[in-house]
Length: 335
Image (cartoon, rainbow, N blue to C red):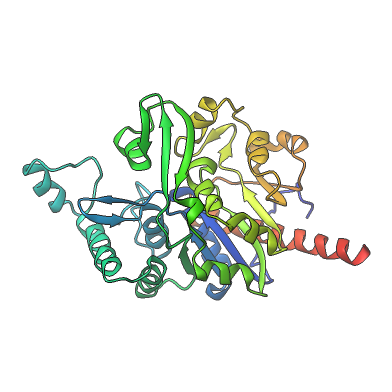
């Protein structure tokens, strides 16, 4: 298999551990595929917490919960977020009392936020709480918040500076974006468990999931020391493009690129990650873009409509990581 050839079928990849960087729905889909393609002890998913916020007095971690629910088989298959078979008695009662209903909290999902808030107030770290919940939900892979510190994504728009959930949920990403910043990132540090996963001798590759680069991945990379820690691993870092045929499968990625004055194409995504990644994965519908990208490229089917799609893509991406690792080893041996 050359780097630009799609694999005809997925095979269970061999090799060391993989660490994935993930946002919410799109990242969770690939994380689920990776959890099937790899033994559980060989997968760590580091999740964006820049979307976290306080709502109705509760600590809400939307991307973290989406990954947890997805890996546990509890995610709502229609929305990708929240829990399947959810009920909404709480929201109906809240609405009858005149409370804010713009951010939907299902009855089952509400338990997650209440328990997280209780434990944070008792002095526990977010990482410890997430790891305990992961185990209780029967998830074998590690799921780690990017940091235990408070980092908040702020979106500068033509309507002023909006907190992420106000922009994304309340305003449905309608305001025009001029800049995005991450409050608290410079004072934060990767969670100790994240640092340990990056320093683990068995680490063989890092996968940037097809999450929104600006809203979901950049908050992770903005955490002080995170970029340096990623590069210091010395293992291949591979990004899976969130674009298919010049459009985002879900979310405002394309709209944000337009508003930031960027071409809505694979070259712009690759340029965004320049200096960090060693390989780039794009959909076969965008195969012509391979010639515009400086790093090694894997062309495959990146649409994840089914579980089989997710497992196949995960196997392709992991095999690509291992192939790049072998290339790097040969290059070092020859120098």
